[in-house]
Image 1 (tube, one colour):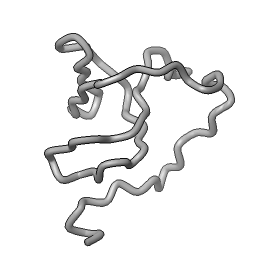
Image 2: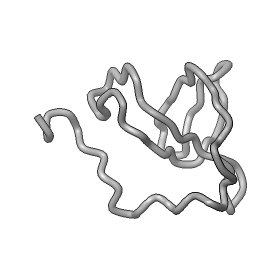
Image 3: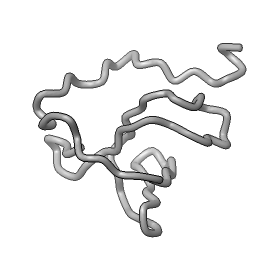
Image 4: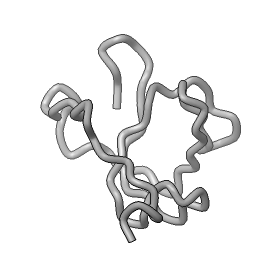
Length: 81
């Protein structure tokens, strides 16, 4: 997803998170991508690393999506179980 400030972020559904931060099936938006460290492996401005298993075109243009709320939850598994 392109960002108004330049660059892009990733958004999608999480599968196989080994950090315990996200549950399978959670939909996320990342912070700005800083580099592609390997093919389909990206590092964000916050230092997180994401591997993309499959790509799909967005269902609508970036400007049609609402911004992610500032209070968007990112609960750890232990906090929700």
